Length: 150
Image (cartoon, rainbow, N blue to C red; front, side, top):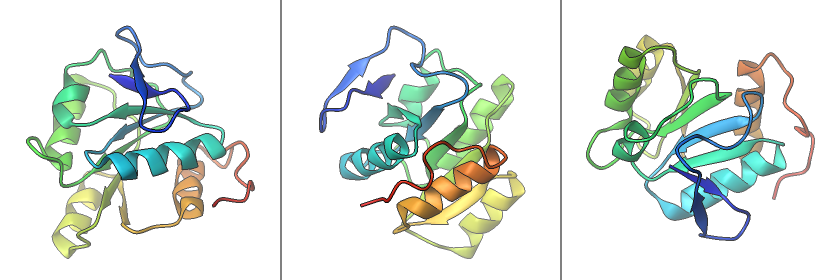
């Protein structure tokens, strides 16, 4: 498990538990480094703490908290895909709300996300849309949501 340390493309190990608090940690599972960096930046601008994983296997191998604000999972991960990851996490117990992201906006993927009770956002998307989606999951309490985004 890795958390973003405010330097581009540099991440640190967090000793087996996710950094951040239950009120501001957002788990991101994304294999594209540039997308991960962009997501982390957007979340930080919104007052959230990104907790980053490059693969489903990395998250499953970590001592993951289930009290994060939400999970942001890329649908098309190498190895275990995003939908399979969410099913595995759900089988382990409590699961934070989930946002699936993908560059392949297909009806089947939207249907799978809806069936799982998750949100679905097609790439490319605006940072504001992502923060509004997370705010909705938290009951409208997202800090700094009005901060202008790049």
